[in-house]
Length: 422
Image 1 (cartoon, rainbow, N blue to C red):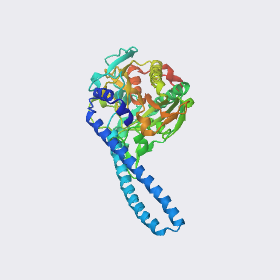
Image 2 (tube, rainbow, N blue to C red; image 1 turned 90 degrees about the vertical axis):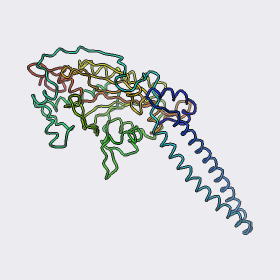
Image 3 (cartoon, rainbow, N blue to C red; image 1 turned 180 degrees about the vertical axis):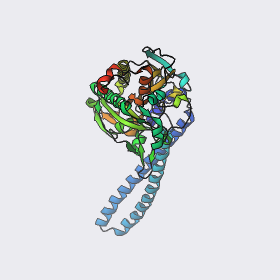
Image 4 (tube, rainbow, N blue to C red; image 1 turned 180 degrees about the horizontal axis):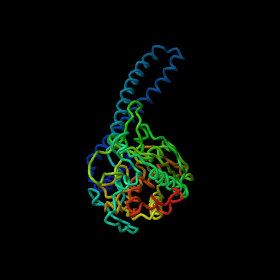
């Protein structure tokens, strides 16, 4: 959520930057400032009314003490009027603050200067590409057919148990999945991240803090009886560990990692682009989260990008990095890099990670602050990334490592799997 003070100071810059998203901020900024002016005026009037009431209350006490009961009772009538006025002003102030927050909740984060203008994924910029795309035979199969051929993932059984988008991993498929999770966590821990095991359900305050609510409410599974939400990513519970905290500058950066299943109610569609592991309602992911000093967050973002690069190099998967344009940028993000692995059998790129800097957008919602070495309290910057989302990584391994005799296992995973071939 943007800060009103920053909107006032950088209004024209914000309007220009938000136009990259196709978001016209001019009229809503007018309404935000008008509402904030009303909030300020109401707060000042309320403070003045309460000050008068307190002053008169002290006078009443003195008058009663001196035996001037009649005079005290006259003033007491006036304090009663002031109490009614303060009650009305408090209600007005609360409704004004609520309206202001509702307005701010409709405004997405300000894109970084590096974000290209554009309306959708076709306008994203490729900034890096690495790896050799393998040449497969004409008999090469997409991963959903390989899964059935080698009996390692059962999509139909998942439909029987739950529904579409909930696959069952079997035998060496389950072992390979577990190997990837452990390998990702080990890489993150070695890079200085602290591992967390977190709840898979969060309350509404947590969903609001990281920006999933109210923006993506329809994409989250809602446990209505307890008003809890199944997490769409470990970013939500891990970042909320620090909600309402005031850290010390010397504590920064805070680096966290965690593995969780993730749950997403995505709109149904059909075709090869969503078949098999390409789009699921439940999937596994290992996440990395940074809490950073504002002056160092973009250096941290580059470090996170390099970290994901190293993992993909070790897996020896061909990949590319895209800088997302304004129209494809997430609501809470200031700058996002998407990683995509090339699936040779499907002849297409599959997104397997997003690494984002949210600057103060999430921190303002979370009230996540730090005290600098001069004693000043300010909002931290938050960042997160997938390292990695498993379904499409697994799809890329199955398809790119297939041979006529089976599926080879990436060398770096063999110690984790205990086998080198399916």
